[in-house]
Amino acid sequence: MGRFIAFVILAIPAIMAAAGIKLMRDTFFAKLFDPIPYLWLQFVIGIVLFLFGFSFFAGFLLNRDRKNGRVTPKYSKKKEN
Image: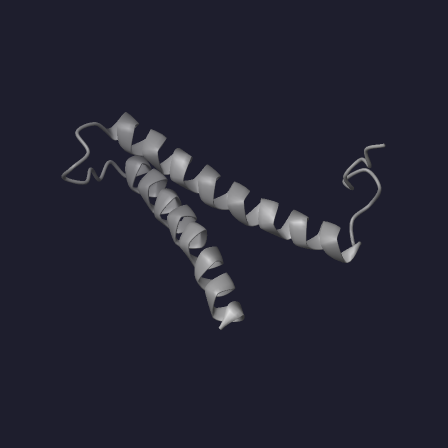
């Protein structure tokens, strides 16, 4: 059950990133979706969705690799005294 919940938590940002890529691609081909009034706004929404999804996934991987000790010292957390 825990793996399924982790999969759902990772699937939602991945879907958001894919939707962001689709919105940016449709902006380049001048296809406007109905609820969005301007092409530039559609592109900005696409960038925000893509960056949020990508950064969430990258942060998850970095956190997991830090926990397993697979990162270089440059990316490891500093220990507080």
